[in-house]
Image (cartoon, rainbow, N blue to C red; front, side, top):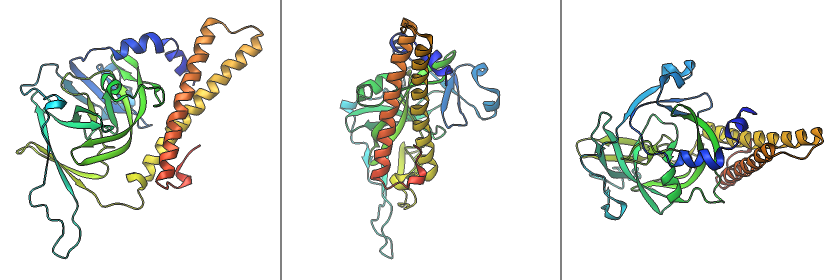
Length: 316
């Protein structure tokens, strides 16, 4: 636990500001997921732990403007069209799954990413790249600020993630709703990082697609989201592994920061002296981190209760 405070102490005011003002970069980057399901990104192969090098993804981000500039949200047309031949009922009268088509902009670079217009919390629209290899959703700090995720009541837990030149701070938080056309996902755990590209504001990961079958029609330049049947064993649209891993993540963060805060208090008591400036800064940071971790955990617990998630799926 102690390695986290040593890394983060003093970063909240200075390093975090520099991190979130970092401009988009270009060149290759490497992406991998650790045993805890956490997404890591680095521009150097040397920063990838040896045990994960057999599953890394190397991708290329180019900061050249797209040949077809992405329109601003105010000029976006209605991008949802009815699917071709969308019968509401089958031959036997059974209900057919709904389909939602969303037009996409191909970013013509070496990666030829699929970029779609996404609505966050019903208020902010931004271009996002579809990344079916990413387990979770990742957005840029400027977009997070527009959505209001840095507001006091949101839950903003600072974490360490693989970044440019090694470890870099990021933010773990929750987005209430993410919507692409008629396809919508609720309660999306999200990692906030420095901008990856000038052409899009983040990566839409597998968590968003969990309740849809997704097809990319490159001829018509549309992404087709087909709703999957409701599974009674997936409360809130998620399986047991999703719920248990998220409870474990948030509960562990809360417990670790609480323990570290108590550790600092004990250190001061045992030294029989008043708390120094360095320890005061660490204590203030630990207090802040504990509160943010508790906000995230409370949000998750409320959402689990609303969706009747079994108690043995939860960790306290």
